[in-house]
Image (tube, rainbow, N blue to C red):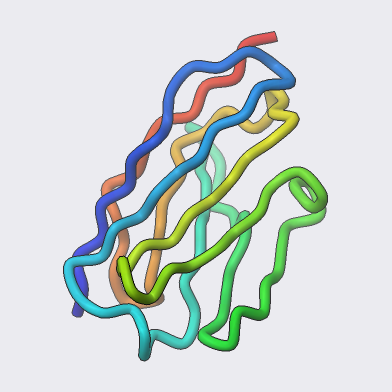
Length: 111
């Protein structure tokens, strides 16, 4: 199974943007679904967005219209473009292939 490494997190003001990247150690071409989750302390990890191998996408209601997930099967990378960020988007963001998880990247949105 592939190993996943996330990057791109950081501190941003409300209304700002960040782009997260998830680089896989191997091909993601045959992986049916790649997804981003997020977690805040004391709460369950929640699905943010997912993208299928046919590029079909699904989003949590709270991020729809602001976040965009994409995948580059040549670069073995999945992206999460986050626009119009809100303080409630603050969390650790994780990438998953369904069987593997990355270590997470912190996103902090200040008001």
